[in-house]
Image 1 (cartoon, rainbow, N blue to C red):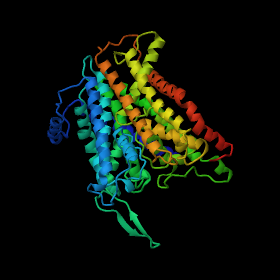
Image 2 (image 1 turned 120 degrees about the vertical axis):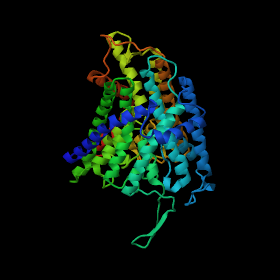
Image 3 (image 1 turned 30 degrees about the vertical axis):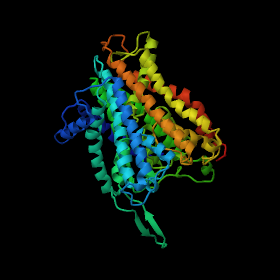
Image 4 (image 1 turned 60 degrees about the horizontal axis):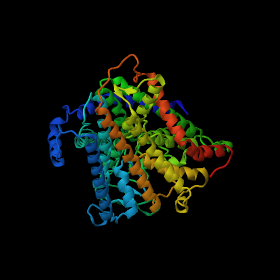
Length: 567
């Protein structure tokens, strides 16, 4: 590790913190229906979309209606995207002549993009037409991100409102998220990426002759526009198979920094939105502090492990850190930072191959996802994910002091605890059960690229990434098989909607409760004690649940590597 490396990490953290308050303030005005500088242009469009949806901005929904609207909209998204991929061979904007996507792969990809996972069992430039990339994948990048943002806002309202029955309107929240936040920022980012050298064209692939006289086909396309929303919406689905390691998607250190900030910016700003809407910004900063502690510790471990490299290389007199699977233009520090960011958020974009990290370097991305991606997390998803742990933490605190637990004046009772625990447990259910079956199924084991504990980690990482709606992978696993396409798709659906529905049920329960004034016995939730309790709760729940599985994979791999054995 070097001073220069830590300075790069500190620059990222500093810029992110500076962005939190202004972006959080703007998002608060958007979700509160207040006028913004974009209102003169966007209000007529917004009202037109409400008319199409058959609703109005003053119309609000009970949590069950909110959930039903969300589920039906996402089901329609799966069906439309699946049909688009199956029919792309006869549809326009297909200059490379891509054929129909196989049924299992189309199911996997449709569920992947609708659930904001963007797991890719295919190479984008060799499988998807321009029409599928733009009208299918890019559209879902927007609306799946907007869906997560809508749920977060609905949950915030449950704490902010003194008493009521409604938690907002799904269609209004989703439209405002897309129209006022995601789309304007992505337009700016697209122009910036084009300026930095990222392609944006509907022209055919380019044929070139190399210095050796060999003909080479260079894939291009509408890359910059998809890149902008894949990062800002924490989607992660790259236009190219190599994702953000490809020079057309991530040309240099400037584009790399912009992409990392894009991944975290909205998720971090949601903590400020929360603080503003509940009338106490310290509450939001406390949540961000808990996220920040877990993030910085993760970065330190990965950077240390990758900078130290493989001890077997040291025995040969070689040093310089672990550069396997990394781009020279980013090096160890920016590859390590990117890996922690993309797995702390539900993004999944990569600028290095996580399967080539050291055992401990690959351990942290796994843990980030297994904790429910609450370390900033996906847009909206990270916030409602950490609220589930907040409910558990204040419930434990209430038991310790012998009084009914409450958070921001809302009493946390049996119903909220049951829903929170149900949502938290659905992730290990999908991650560990599918992993257990895959490790004893010969056809599933045949897909791993490496033997020993690393091969187990490839399977565990795949199902962890799917259920956590992340989308990154240990590259050695061949996932484009009927077994993995179907089971990973099911894991994505479980990890998304078995968390969303309980979270909305909690919102519906809390919004109906009256706010209890703070008293001398109220546990403060905006200070260091609460931050420590929240971090401890997250680590204990994650440790108790996943440590046995991690011990069979990265931990064993690290120990045998020290002993001189490789796989």
